[in-house]
Image (tube, rainbow, N blue to C red):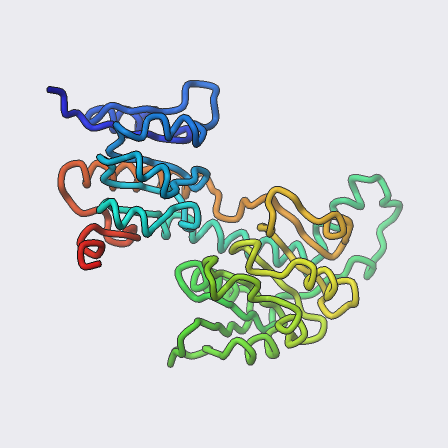
Length: 325
């Protein structure tokens, strides 16, 4: 009887990594020219699967897991795990891993880039030139703000928040931060104190019950008048109608948003605002980081198939924890 395990890779992967997996298992992957294996097709293979590798685009829900009795690991090349039914994975006694370190530097780079675009009016100026509206050099008319001397408030102070801090400090910013639990680290503030003190508030939190609509009308009212808001975490962390109101009434000077509550839909009013920078959920994406995440997923799957533990920093759910109930 053939006991060779089966691995499903739901999105395109480099050929050399697919070949590495194929040395240890049968691999189901998207055919050339097809970007993804959809949920229904994944589910049709569920009964034979030992491992699923995805990049955050696949919903690995309880129905799918219930039909995968041989499943031993779900490896996600992403930071977030909102698309994964973690209780069902625990019940299946399977491992679940993500890649929290692979995207941290890219997200931090993007945070500083969006901050510069927003406060130096780079996006607005670029559109002005593309529209052929530039008629003459006009000193002073495009002056923005320096980052130097401004106070950056980080809500979320994990890998990404700390990476943002290092970059912001190099620009001469003063950095304060907030985490859900009190910290003796220098710069920690309560959320209310941070909102009142920061010139720029940057969000770097996972989406959960505590963070959903964290930045609502009350939070926005607590922010320093004329402050700036940046979100590279998850769209639902912000109450979008409340944000739009704060931008329209001048409470905030502007916002930079990489994520939205109902992606890919972006409210039309935000798309029309010149003091808002909008990007299509690209913050963590870099060629180097993507490759690192893919390599980590492959390594984690192969380790589990050999009866070993995944990379420690990647573990979200482990079977022993599930067994203790």
